[in-house]
Length: 558
Ligand SMILES: CC(=O)N[C@H]1[C@@H](OP(=O)(O)O)O[C@H](CO)[C@@H](O)[C@@H]1O
Ligand SMILES: [Mg+2]
Image (cartoon, rainbow, N blue to C red):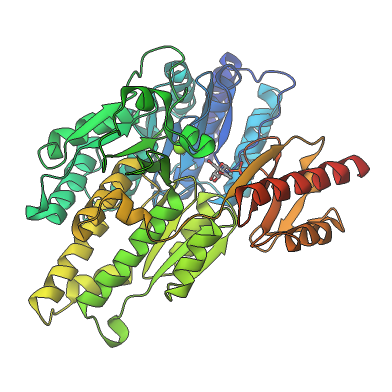
């Protein structure tokens, strides 16, 4: 309690008045219900100003609750169409917002009036035991969407209500993973993670990449589809540092052309359509055998690679599963070369979701690389990966990274190499830990990770691809009246509701060679997703169709 209760009460009243004034400028639209989901809030940008104002309030509360630790706010809608936008909070470690706070975000966003907002805010302050006298610190950024500047204004209005007790830093237009990096670096008081700026990120990433490539450069040219999004800016910056060792050709960099963002390009387009973006196809960028390309998504936290088959000319996708497998095998070898013995031995493991192609899981487990399967959503993968010394996690769609545990880093720093080979392996492991974004999946850093691994192995894309052949598969969206009746368990691989449906799916799977199928409600869209894979494309399609029919029937009966 303040020594001067009268003064404290006055300050509190001033704050609530300021919040009320701000809130009146950004009223909540009627008949809209917001949910802070896997990707934060995400919807049509026109529906978001009130949400941004309120997210600012929550970011400040979280920072004050954590005694002034810096919280991040990212304004983006990733691979969604341009008229959409979104916002998510970043915790001090650079990870996604603590799931316990997601409900508080939802509660604030849905208050219908200024009065109810003030009342919910006050309740949260008490319930979460926030000392409003604590300082707060926030860093924020946005992607290239045209709706970004207005939404940032609404966010800043929320910060302003708190006056000078909130320190804010506008990182500007940048990628989601760079913002996560800045948050993590700002909170790392030892300064060892890197400088908390975009330039600090570029320097750290480029230095590590140069160490890893050494005399192996210059590498073969790489074509990078930036989805006409903010990844184009980051790519331009990093190219200034490393362009002499890897000739980078940016494609789809029209960040200011209306409607271009994520349209007919980007990682989501490529993964969903299993085809090249038309712009890459028609320009013939990949026609020279051995040429590889990659696509970022709209906020550059996802990446997929591809190339054209060297004799057939057909499209070959190297998705998140392919990246995870190559990287995990590579780190397994590097750890063996480091010759760390006894308690210092480092364990490499992989975390996947049920959407990982069955062939990738089989490939890893048959080579004694442990694989954990978790529910969809980066937060689940990230936490599971933290349980390994070196935890590789990727969603099939290309979102992922490699985490080095603090103990693993300490072991590597303290290691006494027994030979020049082991010294080199240790040096490289440490350089990889600097290259790879330790907070979140990052298209730019993952791209350089892939490039460094290919360079070390002396591989072309086709060598990488040769490890295993994906099982043919099909992913279908099913629109149902109420997706909440579908309840999944066992890392979302089985349904417990509607009762009896799983038994029917099991029967359908048993009829198909290598058949595997599962159903789960989407966490980001109003639909149910059906995944099926089998020994042939025809059987995968048939299995998917059967399961879609089962889902629709049980939906009608409920
Ligand atoms: C099958 C699929 O790709 N699902 C995506 C999608 O989640 P859903 O809950 O399936 O809508 O969006 C998530 C957030 O971007 C991403 O983490 C996840 O991988
Ligand atoms: Mg994204």
